[in-house]
Length: 309
Ligand code: SF4
Image (tube, rainbow, N blue to C red; front, side, top):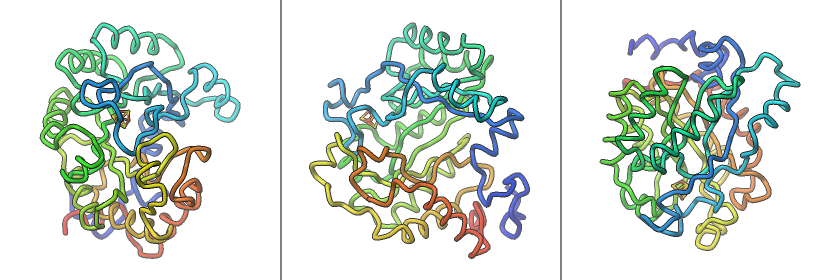
């Protein structure tokens, strides 16, 4: 990556000071492109007893996919505002590669048969990418648009163990290599504000993921304590940051160390208001994003400005 980005914001960011996924999608598809959250009816190894039964401690019992409803219903709503929009079907709930390959094939191709769907986004765990699943994803990737989303949350073992994530960093590394070797795009999810983590630890996770070969995008997620999660019982009053401003400050510093070509898919939390417990200001996504943009401007900085430092 050229060091010119240390002194000048890249033109391909458009108006933004980071490389948003929406900008990338618009450039790639030539139209606004919308992800439709759908529920494929999967479970996950942290809930069905294969690895654990309680789930990751931050996860609500719906599997972090609170917005899922049918494709056609969603398209009908969006088309009123964006008649030319394109759509990606987002298998979001639970672990969407955690089933025999024939079941995966049936579900993925059923969705792709909808002529309004341009491609798939598939949320999963790094330990749920079997050879059969990878072969199927490689096949789909050759004929349709596709990216995979994987939760990592943190690179720190003690935190990961406390979260009951049930896979190691080495598993993440291996799955990323497999996806990159098959030319499949992947996006990695980190959580900021996990109990026991300092800002330096969070920045170390960001730095590590940002250097993953083949990485397409990152999601930075503010820890939300939600109803139905184990953390509702153990961390009900936990405040991951003492204010919006301290969270915004950290996000700006994270963006500075992410290379400019990595697409940014999320910069805050996403829990629906009815299940959000803490932090109470998290539901106000627009305010948080506005403040991140404001600080990027005030500090005259941008994604990747300190990537080479
Ligand atoms: S976060 Fe994902 S892997 Fe963890 S319990 Fe929820 S659905 Fe399962």
